[in-house]
Length: 232
Image 1 (cartoon, helix red, strand yellow):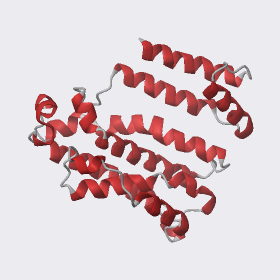
Image 2 (cartoon, rainbow, N blue to C red; image 1 turned 135 degrees about the horizontal axis):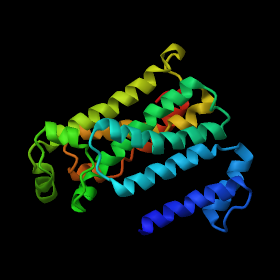
Image 3 (tube, one colour; image 1 turned 180 degrees about the horizontal axis):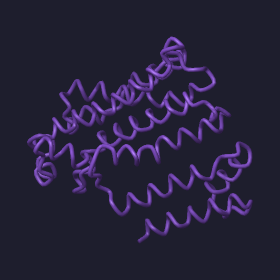
Protein backbone atom coordinates (compact mmCIF):
# COMPACT_ATOMS: atom_id res chain seq x y z
CA UNK A 1 0.00 0.00 0.00
CA UNK A 2 2.78 2.45 0.93
CA UNK A 3 4.61 1.60 -2.29
CA UNK A 4 1.47 2.28 -4.32
CA UNK A 5 1.05 5.63 -2.60
CA UNK A 6 4.61 6.58 -3.47
CA UNK A 7 4.08 5.68 -7.11
CA UNK A 8 0.94 7.83 -7.22
CA UNK A 9 2.84 10.71 -5.64
CA UNK A 10 5.39 10.59 -8.45
CA UNK A 11 2.71 10.32 -11.13
CA UNK A 12 1.11 13.46 -9.72
CA UNK A 13 4.54 15.07 -9.40
CA UNK A 14 5.39 14.48 -13.06
CA UNK A 15 2.05 15.96 -14.09
CA UNK A 16 2.62 18.99 -11.88
CA UNK A 17 6.15 19.40 -13.22
CA UNK A 18 4.78 19.57 -16.76
CA UNK A 19 2.44 22.34 -15.57
CA UNK A 20 5.34 24.22 -13.93
CA UNK A 21 3.86 23.57 -10.49
CA UNK A 22 6.28 21.05 -8.95
CA UNK A 23 5.63 19.86 -5.39
CA UNK A 24 7.99 21.16 -2.70
CA UNK A 25 10.10 18.03 -2.70
CA UNK A 26 13.87 18.31 -3.36
CA UNK A 27 13.94 15.61 -6.05
CA UNK A 28 10.78 16.96 -7.72
CA UNK A 29 12.22 20.48 -7.75
CA UNK A 30 15.49 19.26 -9.25
CA UNK A 31 13.57 17.22 -11.82
CA UNK A 32 11.53 20.30 -12.71
CA UNK A 33 14.70 22.31 -13.33
CA UNK A 34 16.15 19.52 -15.46
CA UNK A 35 12.91 19.09 -17.38
CA UNK A 36 12.78 22.80 -18.16
CA UNK A 37 16.43 23.05 -19.16
CA UNK A 38 16.67 19.83 -21.20
CA UNK A 39 13.02 19.33 -22.19
CA UNK A 40 12.89 15.83 -20.75
CA UNK A 41 9.98 13.78 -22.16
CA UNK A 42 7.34 13.12 -19.50
CA UNK A 43 6.66 9.84 -21.31
CA UNK A 44 9.97 8.43 -20.12
CA UNK A 45 9.37 9.48 -16.52
CA UNK A 46 5.89 7.95 -16.48
CA UNK A 47 7.21 4.79 -18.09
CA UNK A 48 9.66 4.28 -15.22
CA UNK A 49 6.94 4.89 -12.63
CA UNK A 50 4.51 2.49 -14.31
CA UNK A 51 7.14 -0.26 -14.49
CA UNK A 52 8.09 0.16 -10.82
CA UNK A 53 4.42 0.15 -9.88
CA UNK A 54 3.84 -3.10 -11.76
CA UNK A 55 6.87 -4.61 -10.04
CA UNK A 56 5.17 -4.05 -6.69
CA UNK A 57 2.27 -6.21 -7.87
CA UNK A 58 4.25 -8.97 -9.60
CA UNK A 59 7.91 -8.98 -8.50
CA UNK A 60 8.52 -12.44 -10.00
CA UNK A 61 8.94 -12.63 -13.76
CA UNK A 62 7.77 -15.65 -15.77
CA UNK A 63 10.23 -15.27 -18.66
CA UNK A 64 13.52 -13.67 -19.66
CA UNK A 65 11.56 -11.50 -22.09
CA UNK A 66 9.37 -10.13 -19.30
CA UNK A 67 12.47 -9.17 -17.29
CA UNK A 68 13.91 -7.53 -20.39
CA UNK A 69 10.71 -5.55 -20.85
CA UNK A 70 10.94 -4.35 -17.24
CA UNK A 71 14.61 -3.45 -17.73
CA UNK A 72 13.81 -1.56 -20.92
CA UNK A 73 11.18 0.44 -19.05
CA UNK A 74 13.50 1.31 -16.17
CA UNK A 75 17.28 1.13 -16.67
CA UNK A 76 17.19 1.69 -20.44
CA UNK A 77 14.72 4.53 -20.08
CA UNK A 78 17.04 6.25 -17.60
CA UNK A 79 19.75 6.12 -20.26
CA UNK A 80 17.31 7.59 -22.80
CA UNK A 81 16.78 10.49 -20.42
CA UNK A 82 20.53 11.05 -20.16
CA UNK A 83 20.77 11.00 -23.96
CA UNK A 84 18.06 13.67 -23.99
CA UNK A 85 20.05 15.77 -21.55
CA UNK A 86 23.07 15.46 -23.85
CA UNK A 87 20.90 16.42 -26.84
CA UNK A 88 21.59 13.02 -28.44
CA UNK A 89 18.15 11.44 -28.30
CA UNK A 90 17.69 11.69 -32.08
CA UNK A 91 20.39 9.09 -32.76
CA UNK A 92 18.85 5.66 -33.41
CA UNK A 93 22.22 3.96 -32.96
CA UNK A 94 22.83 5.51 -29.54
CA UNK A 95 19.27 4.77 -28.40
CA UNK A 96 19.50 1.17 -29.60
CA UNK A 97 22.82 0.64 -27.85
CA UNK A 98 21.51 2.29 -24.68
CA UNK A 99 18.55 -0.08 -24.73
CA UNK A 100 20.84 -3.12 -24.67
CA UNK A 101 23.13 -1.61 -22.02
CA UNK A 102 20.15 -0.91 -19.79
CA UNK A 103 18.92 -4.50 -20.05
CA UNK A 104 22.39 -5.92 -19.39
CA UNK A 105 22.75 -3.63 -16.38
CA UNK A 106 19.42 -4.70 -14.90
CA UNK A 107 20.22 -8.39 -15.33
CA UNK A 108 23.63 -7.97 -13.70
CA UNK A 109 22.09 -6.03 -10.82
CA UNK A 110 19.54 -8.79 -10.22
CA UNK A 111 22.25 -11.44 -10.24
CA UNK A 112 24.43 -9.51 -7.84
CA UNK A 113 21.45 -9.03 -5.52
CA UNK A 114 20.33 -12.67 -5.74
CA UNK A 115 21.65 -13.58 -2.25
CA UNK A 116 19.77 -10.68 -0.67
CA UNK A 117 16.53 -11.43 -2.49
CA UNK A 118 16.83 -15.12 -1.61
CA UNK A 119 17.18 -14.14 2.05
CA UNK A 120 13.85 -12.33 1.65
CA UNK A 121 12.35 -15.40 -0.05
CA UNK A 122 12.18 -13.77 -3.47
CA UNK A 123 13.41 -15.32 -6.70
CA UNK A 124 14.67 -12.80 -9.24
CA UNK A 125 15.74 -15.26 -11.93
CA UNK A 126 12.77 -15.75 -14.29
CA UNK A 127 10.68 -18.86 -13.99
CA UNK A 128 11.52 -20.18 -17.45
CA UNK A 129 15.20 -20.44 -16.49
CA UNK A 130 14.65 -21.92 -13.04
CA UNK A 131 12.23 -24.48 -14.45
CA UNK A 132 14.60 -25.38 -17.28
CA UNK A 133 17.39 -26.09 -14.79
CA UNK A 134 15.28 -27.88 -12.18
CA UNK A 135 15.69 -25.20 -9.53
CA UNK A 136 13.51 -25.46 -6.44
CA UNK A 137 12.99 -22.03 -4.94
CA UNK A 138 12.65 -23.32 -1.38
CA UNK A 139 16.00 -25.06 -1.70
CA UNK A 140 17.60 -21.82 -2.91
CA UNK A 141 16.15 -19.97 0.09
CA UNK A 142 17.58 -22.60 2.45
CA UNK A 143 20.92 -23.52 0.88
CA UNK A 144 21.81 -20.66 -1.47
CA UNK A 145 24.45 -21.59 -4.03
CA UNK A 146 24.30 -25.25 -3.05
CA UNK A 147 20.77 -25.59 -4.43
CA UNK A 148 20.51 -27.93 -7.38
CA UNK A 149 20.53 -26.17 -10.75
CA UNK A 150 20.91 -22.64 -9.44
CA UNK A 151 24.39 -22.11 -10.91
CA UNK A 152 23.12 -23.30 -14.30
CA UNK A 153 20.21 -20.87 -14.11
CA UNK A 154 22.60 -18.08 -13.16
CA UNK A 155 24.80 -19.02 -16.13
CA UNK A 156 21.85 -18.83 -18.51
CA UNK A 157 20.74 -15.46 -17.14
CA UNK A 158 24.29 -14.08 -17.23
CA UNK A 159 24.68 -15.28 -20.81
CA UNK A 160 21.66 -13.24 -21.88
CA UNK A 161 23.09 -10.20 -20.09
CA UNK A 162 26.41 -10.67 -21.87
CA UNK A 163 24.64 -11.05 -25.22
CA UNK A 164 23.02 -7.65 -24.73
CA UNK A 165 26.43 -6.18 -23.88
CA UNK A 166 27.97 -7.67 -27.03
CA UNK A 167 25.09 -6.42 -29.17
CA UNK A 168 25.59 -2.89 -27.85
CA UNK A 169 29.29 -3.05 -28.72
CA UNK A 170 28.52 -4.42 -32.18
CA UNK A 171 26.45 -1.34 -32.97
CA UNK A 172 29.64 0.75 -32.94
CA UNK A 173 31.60 -1.67 -35.12
CA UNK A 174 31.53 0.62 -38.16
CA UNK A 175 33.16 3.30 -36.02
CA UNK A 176 35.98 0.99 -34.95
CA UNK A 177 34.15 0.15 -31.75
CA UNK A 178 34.39 3.76 -30.63
CA UNK A 179 31.50 5.59 -29.00
CA UNK A 180 31.17 9.29 -29.90
CA UNK A 181 32.93 11.26 -27.18
CA UNK A 182 29.84 13.31 -26.34
CA UNK A 183 27.85 10.10 -25.70
CA UNK A 184 30.47 8.26 -23.66
CA UNK A 185 29.03 9.28 -20.25
CA UNK A 186 25.95 7.18 -21.06
CA UNK A 187 27.91 4.07 -21.96
CA UNK A 188 30.34 4.09 -19.03
CA UNK A 189 27.54 2.32 -17.14
CA UNK A 190 28.44 -0.78 -19.18
CA UNK A 191 31.86 -1.03 -17.51
CA UNK A 192 30.64 -2.25 -14.07
CA UNK A 193 28.34 -4.71 -15.87
CA UNK A 194 31.20 -6.26 -17.82
CA UNK A 195 33.35 -6.34 -14.69
CA UNK A 196 30.69 -8.13 -12.65
CA UNK A 197 30.03 -10.71 -15.36
CA UNK A 198 33.75 -11.44 -15.56
CA UNK A 199 33.92 -11.97 -11.79
CA UNK A 200 30.81 -14.14 -11.90
CA UNK A 201 32.45 -16.38 -14.48
CA UNK A 202 35.58 -16.69 -12.33
CA UNK A 203 33.52 -18.13 -9.45
CA UNK A 204 31.79 -20.61 -11.78
CA UNK A 205 28.52 -18.67 -11.76
CA UNK A 206 27.98 -19.11 -8.04
CA UNK A 207 26.04 -15.89 -7.40
CA UNK A 208 26.26 -16.60 -3.65
CA UNK A 209 30.08 -16.50 -3.57
CA UNK A 210 31.12 -13.79 -1.06
CA UNK A 211 33.84 -12.61 -3.48
CA UNK A 212 31.15 -11.04 -5.65
CA UNK A 213 30.10 -8.70 -2.86
CA UNK A 214 33.56 -7.20 -2.50
CA UNK A 215 34.45 -3.86 -4.02
CA UNK A 216 36.33 -4.07 -7.30
CA UNK A 217 39.34 -1.86 -6.68
CA UNK A 218 40.15 -1.92 -10.40
CA UNK A 219 36.77 -0.51 -11.41
CA UNK A 220 37.71 3.21 -11.28
CA UNK A 221 40.71 2.46 -13.47
CA UNK A 222 38.55 0.46 -15.90
CA UNK A 223 36.08 3.33 -16.14
CA UNK A 224 38.92 5.78 -16.79
CA UNK A 225 40.37 3.48 -19.46
CA UNK A 226 36.96 3.15 -21.14
CA UNK A 227 36.50 6.92 -21.10
CA UNK A 228 39.96 7.47 -22.56
CA UNK A 229 39.67 4.80 -25.24
CA UNK A 230 36.07 5.60 -26.20
CA UNK A 231 35.03 1.96 -25.95
CA UNK A 232 33.36 -0.17 -23.32
